[in-house]
Image (cartoon, rainbow over all chains, first blue to last red; front, top):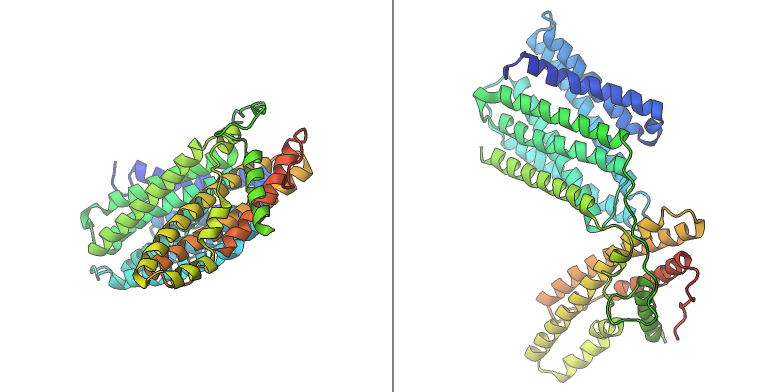
Length: 265
Length: 178
């Protein structure tokens, strides 16, 4: 059941990628691909890359060395698409706010540079685990990509949280799915790249695939299901006189303005 | 394996932060009177007095060095409290402005956009000012620049007043000081 090439293993590898391709198709039909072009390209590109790797795994004529080269190629394409997608998320969240866009760009670049150095250091410190170079290198590359991806997404979440920015539901859903996937994959690939749990790697693979499946379902939920209308509270009638507490915002602002105009005199 | 453990801890903390953000987003108070009531009025004059360089110079001349440093630290802590409240108010105004951005009225949307932009700028300035205040706490003799916070507050107040008027046209216009 939990072994490689079991039914569950095949299902978890195949179905999220098929679902992701269907999601891209549905987004195209609903016109969402125009609003989120990079996510649509990511969905098609990442799913196609994974399906190619999956097919190569099943075809007997593909040698292990060739399979790892295909795996590396897919990893590079997927990694590149993820970073472009993170840039799209950043633009969608902060692009509308001129006050934040500039400082946010400077900060995220700084964070990105720091993460690249940290990820390079982590890859350099990873022990040689006796695997073939191409295999160990793939593990380190996965760890590197997910470390940078997790850091950048965490920055976007914390930055928008500090400024109380409420991103659009669909953008939030894309970022949430990507972040959950990145965090879990970072943990599992860190174990693999550092030679941990050598006998239970199939379990880590299954955990990765199951997480990705959940993330694809998160994208379905946030991109295709409309948000329920929230009940709005009616505005209470204005009190006849200003009470000492619980003032309406206009009164507070009037008070601030009066104080400030006095200062400016 | 130490490195793997560190990375796992980082991943777990990041995941917890993301879930925390998602939950807080879900539980956010609905926009409306509840949100407005959370705004705390700030005594801007007292704040301006606290960060006035002339006041600091006066105290530096009149007090012994040791006493001046103590008084300055107390004043800086008070200024930090004001900046924190101003920053919190700005965050609430961001939420109010964002909810008003979905209005059908073009003028309201424009005013709300301006309010959000200025609130974000103020919150950003407040963060920088707070950082400078904490630095100044370590070196009480250094200068302190909190002017951007004051300027931001003035602009923010005007924008918020305009949005308030547009959302409640029946209310009397009360921008000018009485």
